Structures are given as C-alpha cells and as structure tokens.
Length: 314
Image (tube, rainbow, N blue to C red; front, side):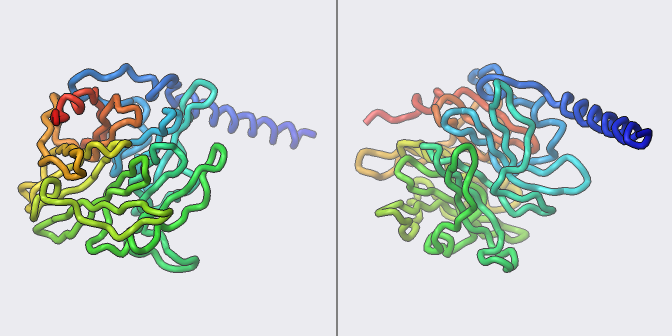
C-alpha cells in the first residue's frame, strides 16, 4: 500500500508538471489565432504563438478555407534541428498547441515542406523527398497530396510522375486553383548562381498533364522566379523573384500578374507594400482578405485589398 501511495504521489507530480507546461502555451481564440486584422502596412503575425517553439520557417503559413486549421513547415527551437509540417486547429473555441501533422514526420534536416490546401479544403498538397517505394531511400523532392477523411487526412499519395519528372528540381511552394490546376516553381542552384521558372500543370479529365512553362510576362529569363500563389479563380498570380547572383538574391521582391480574358498574362509588376522587408513565400488567405509573408524566422501579414486595386481594367 505504501508503495502504491508513493507511485501515485510521483505520478501526480509528473501530471502537474505536464499541465503547467501546457498552461504556458498561449490561449488564443477566434479567427487567425485571435489576432487583430492588419492594416495597409505589414505586421508580425501571432508572434506569441510561434516565437517560443520554433527557430525558423521555410514555407509560408496556410489556413483552411473555413479558417479553422493552420499548417506550416518549421524547425524546432531546440538542439535537434528537427523539421516537419506542423498544424494547429481551432477546437472548443481555442487554437490547439502545434503538433506534427498526421501525414508528416519530424526528422533532422526535414523531408516535408510547403503545405498548400485546395480552395475546396478537400486536399492538401506538400513537397517531400521521402522514398517513393516502401523501404527505399529519400531522394529528390516530389509533390504529394492527402485528401480529407473526417477531421484528419488520408495516407500520402504521390502526384503522377509526369509532373514530378519535369526539368529542374521542383522546389519551394506551389498552389492550386479551383479547377485543380497546379502552379509550381523549379530551381537550378550552385554556389554562385540560382535560377528557376514557374510552371503550370493543368488538371484535365482527372489527371495532370505535361507541365508548361509560363511566358516571359512572369518568368524573367535568368532570374529565380518562385513561390507562385494562384488566386482560387485563377485570375491573378503572385510570386517571388530575385536576381541570379548572390548579391541580387536579397531582398526578395513580390510580383503580381493578372490573367487576361484571352488567357494570357499581363507583364508582372513589383508590388510595393508599406513595411515590407524583403519578404517571400506570399500566400493569400482563401477569403482574399489577407496576404501572408515570411521574413527570416517570422511570419507577417497585411491587408490584401490592394490586389484588386492593381487589377487592370480591360
């Protein structure tokens, strides 16, 4: 009996310690982690939510169309350097403590990156260098997807190789419109220069067809054009562009191009956002209200109403 009492005593101490650790996590409620909506100048996004747990981010942050789920890729703020795609969900009025998404894995160096949810909320796409075959070795980055099953996701499936076999390594973000058309970036990199272009793979008859490189209105020859974000209706494309040499890589700049009625694109123009610090990884919320950006180890956001003001009148 004494031994049982001692065991229960120590279990109680452990339980209290765990509860106290969880209580340190901020209690956030409401849309977008309960943050006050931003104005016309970029503002840090939920620093109290992200600041203590994570060291750095590679992807942007995305929300589900109903605004009740958030996903991002990050490195833990500890000595492990472990990376994965994390998630938080709005449950019982509060955002849950971040945890590794069910389809991802926490490993050193990271294998999974760049989550993106389709406009209908039924599919989540991401990049991974995980083995294609069971028991195989990690290889080049490919695009995978999961589909929604209740409140969770299916097992990951590989996008057909006609897309993943495209020239140049698929890298760092892509997006999908309501029709399922997939816009993605490629890159070629060495110690001195980096370049890459944005491609479109149309979704026709239930499958992705051979990717086509977007024209010079979007891809400036020799530069690194990357991180495309397509509007749900396909009417505009926001992306990041930098020069090919080290001295021209930073600060990154955000560009925007609009689709014309004939299906061609306007010449991309640089977006000047007040307070912008050379951010990258542009992501517009599904409701079109906010533009999310990443700068270093922080997320930022800004009112996105300026996008419509940029739209040319035909």
